[in-house]
Length: 357
Image (tube, rainbow, N blue to C red):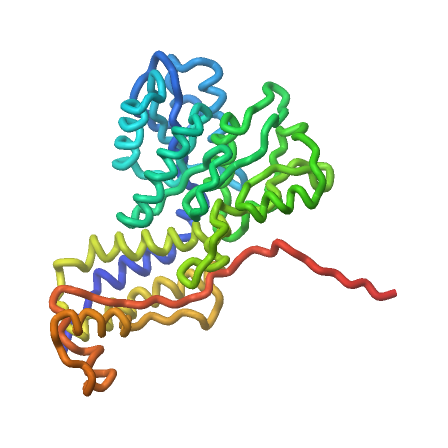
């Protein structure tokens, strides 16, 4: 009889219980240009901001710390003299080893944006590092890139160009609870943005652009979308929503990190231990159901039969006459193939009313 994986169960349960709390406050990675305070800094509030920074740069840090329903957990700051190739590479290398959720800069050029978008895509798609970027006017067609596209944003102290407002947008997203969307999020300090008709705003949203518009007398995020416009069977419409991608990323990070810390290399790869691991993951997801992030009765964790069959075939094993249970229990050496199915809850974004008198 298997002894089980008690530490895995406990860690997964703890991760599930704290998921909402951790999802309330994200981390902004901010790249600034300045002649002083070069290198990395961690900023929890403005008192942590390097005094050597210019007033303009301190303002960008303040913008990133404003948030939405909450302030971001912190801003991870990296200061360079300029954003030529070597300095940008140094900044990105620094952030590869620094925990963050959204990277941005008021100084990124279109060339910088292309490089950062490529870097974020590679981290997400190739290395499983679920970070994102808020970039100005960057058509990336990817769930990891938020394409912010509003210009001439007027506030009491400054009129912002698109790139200059990305720290505010990154902080707003990072400070939005996982239970709600950034759609219609109010940005109270904004007093004006260029006017455009409703259908023009809707068209931009359809093009994967995050924009600010005026609604009910306040300036708000029109809809919380990322730059993904080309959907597929692998990446459906859910991947276009900032809220849903944030929850997917939380789940991916929690499950992967817990497996790395508490499972890999610590237990025999028996079918019994695989089942206990799947039960632990299901328990974590059930907590997200209780937290209102996942729809009830949609959670299913099981052996990924498609991947398992493909692996056994690659070893030259004839599975044509095996029963399904035999395939599930077959020795997969050091590999574990698990499929997780669930339905993430979106926020209310459209209300259709019919009034009868």
